[in-house]
Image (cartoon, rainbow, N blue to C red):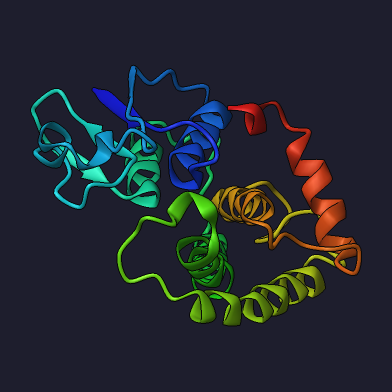
Length: 203
C-alpha cells in the first residue's frame, strides 16, 4: 500500500501518522505538496477526485480517502492497541467524541483558516467577515472541550483514543491558524501538554 501524505501544518494527514505511530505501523508514503498544488494535479485527482490528502492506495488499486476512514481500515488490520474502543460502550463513546471534535471544533477552525489566513488568500469565494465571525465559535468549542476534560485524563474515557488524536491535531492546527486555546482553557491545555508528550505526537 502507499500513503499519500502532506506535511504539517496539514492536520488530516497528521491524524493518520499519529494513529500509525501509536499502532507501530510503518506506512510506505509519498509526499504531496499542498503549497505546490500537487493535490490538485491530474495525477493525484485520478487517485482522489476530491483533491485532498490523505489517501491510502492499496495493493489492488483500491483507494481509501478521509483520515478517519483510513484509520478505521488500519484498526481492522491491526486491532491492538484498540484506538476506537473495545467494548460497545467504549466504541460508542469514542465515536461520539470523534463527531464532537469534527462538528464543534474543526468546522469553525476550518472556516477561519479558509476565509482569513494569508496562505489561503488566493482561494475563490473567500469571505473575511464570515471567517472572523467563526472565531467566537472556536472559542466556544475550546471552552466546551475544556469543561469536558476537567476531570478526565483523556477525551473519551480512561485511555488514549482516536478522539484524542482528532482533538490534538485540531488544537495544533487552530494554533497555527491563529485561533488556538488560551490560558482560560486550563484543563484543555493540561491535556494538550500531556498528549503532545507522547512519542506519536511527533509523527
